[in-house]
Length: 108
Image (cartoon, rainbow, N blue to C red; front, side, top):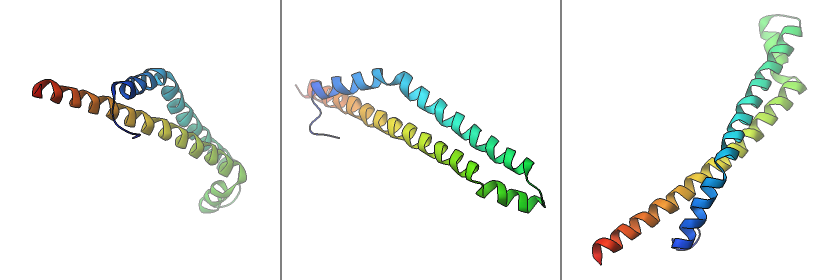
């Protein structure tokens, strides 16, 4: 967190949370979509390959198309987690501000 938890900082956190609801959901969907595509790419390579099951699995795992698809998945995963983590931090700011103000009301 940056600096003290002031009302201004809490309002900034609330604004971020409300502004990123849809974007976070979209990043989650992007991540799931990328995972689906990576698995489908691997399955396609496996199906089109020749050899034993072990050989076909090895070819599917190491095929450039599979690797590229999983790289897209990992990047989508990273983006989603970055936003989810930031939203978690902003939620902590709001809760900290609430707690500080409750303590002030009780003490004053």
